[in-house]
Image (cartoon, rainbow, N blue to C red):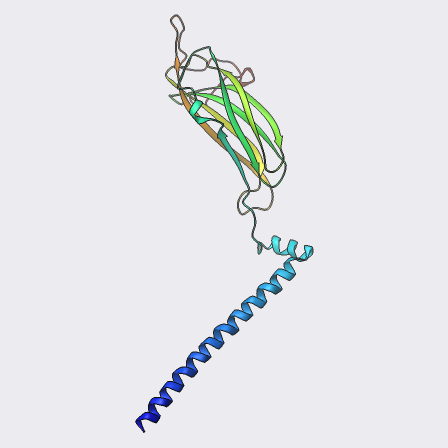
Amino acid sequence: MLFALKRGFELSSSNKRLRSTAALLAAGSVIGLGAIVFAAFAASPVIARQMDEWRLLPRPELVTQLYFTDYRQLPAAAAAGTEQTVLFTVRNLEYQTTTYRYTIIAVAEDDKTEYLVGDGIFTLAHDSSLATSKPVTLLPLKGRVAIRVNLEYEGIAQGNSTPVAQTQSIHYWTTVRIMAGTKAKTIAPDRPSSEKERTREGS
C-alpha cells in the first residue's frame, strides 16, 4: 500500500510538471503568434503610420551633435587684437534636412560683458556633417574669456511629433594677454549689436 501511495504521488508530480510545461508552451505560442500578427499589420503603410502616430512603434533618436573639431588644439592664451580660428563640427542626425544658425560670442570672465565675434548659417541633410572654421579677433577684455558657440535650429524634441526651436552651446576658456599701452575693457562700449558688440542687461 505504501508503494501504491508513493507511486501515486510520483505520478501526480509528473502530471503537474507536464501541465506546467504545456502551459508555458501555449503561452509562448500565443506570444509568437501575436508578434507575427503585429509585424504583418505593421508592414501595411497605412497601419504603420497610424501605429506610429499612437507611438506604438519604436522611433529612432533624433539628435544634432555639436563639438569642437579638435579640442586638443584649443588655444589657452592669445594676445588682444590678434586673430584665432574657432573650428567646430555639426552633425545632423535629425532624420530630416535641417537649417542651422550659429553665433560665436566672447564672454568676459566676470560674465558681464560679451561680444559677438562671428555668425553664420548653413543647411545639412540627414546623417551629414560640416566642419566650420571661423576666424575671430579677440578684444582686450580683462582676464580670461570664454569663446562660446551657440547653435539654433528646429528639431523634433523627445516626446514631440513636430519640429520646435532648439539650442545648443559649447565653449572653451582662453586668457587674453593685454599688450603694453593697450587699455583693458571691463564693460562693453555703447555700440549696437549690429556692430558685433553687445552688453548683457544689468552690466
